[in-house]
Image (cartoon, rainbow over all chains, first blue to last red; front, side, top):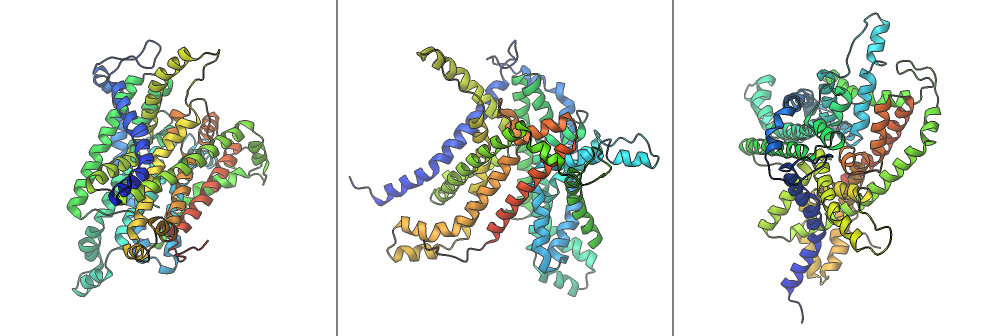
Length: 288
Length: 274
């Protein structure tokens, strides 16, 4: 039986999408369902999971209130601090940098993001640790300074780790900006400062939104930075999850927390998209 | 403004530079450079646990990145041909794979696999005629699957963006000249998307090679390089850790620079004749 053109076309399409579909279903959809099922279960006598249908795990969430509090406070604050450093940098790269060096300078900003976050965070652990800056301060007579294992250290690590991710979308939106608008504004007698606030800043808001949303979402699931720089004192939801799954082995409770974490991420994403649509059409951001 | 930018670059690179510098320190002191030495590199490379972890990481990164590049490219090509509704569902799943935090991906995969193994292993054991039935467990497979999920979505996004910039006219011209769809694909489409596929592969490799949190959950008894580094850091900050960190850094720097060069390449060689 000869295949018609449309059947053949459909077969090829199916074949092309089959592996990815199977992968997404088996390793994304199914695991998520399993996690939800676990979250309404009970902890087994020796840890792990025992089938049940109870909302007890969710009722128990306040037991980890500190992790939620730290995450929901430090993630937005960290993203905001990133923004404060990122905006002038992106502005310089897009508007002021000499065109000859622009590509190189942009690359130098992006490259660290794709190197090991573990190593980059470790670098700060090394600097802030007792043999680093506190040791130097000790030599000039300022003794017993504690930098590691504080919220400040965690925030520093966050800005360090996620700065490139904040700079890129802002850079992209500023680079697209039509220079003639700035000239028009100047021709109409606006001072540079008022041109910035009435033209440049509003037009770069989509990039700002994308950056803030990306960084906040990634920070909500952060583990390494609070683990290495917060040293168990400033812990995030991610740290609570590692503890519940790999140390105290309370899987149902951990699953419930993981489900709520996904819910928070979805809410943040929806709010960000709503705002982005209001500001302008959707934009694609080149992350690489 | 310029001063500020200088500080930003200093901020980005000085900490890394410090780790690199002190990896060559002869002494153990972290705040005093007592002399140049590659002793710590020798120590690190003579450590069998480190070498095993490195081998594991390479096996996992190569496999998951290859699968991600092939399946992701196929998906990007297939998405073009889908109706808008099915496409929206697929795009949604890809976005989910990218946005869901790694810690959740790790947990969900762990929970699902343990549940599946809990059913499969006893079933096999009861049917197995011999003494030692095969046991499924966490290891290479689970890490590759969990890494591949994110990186496949990443490759699909990158290749999709490249396909969107391709002119339809050149494909149509090829068809008008009686090229079969396969020939058109091989001679027109593939050469144009190849740089983005390769870039996607390298990013996927870099991600897998550097990932800690996903592997931490699904590695079972296997140790990857980041897991080993993490464990060493927790045991204490030593020059040996600095040497390992420097090597990890240099490896991923090389990969990312190559990936960026490939993505910048605007395919001047349109028809790469074999």
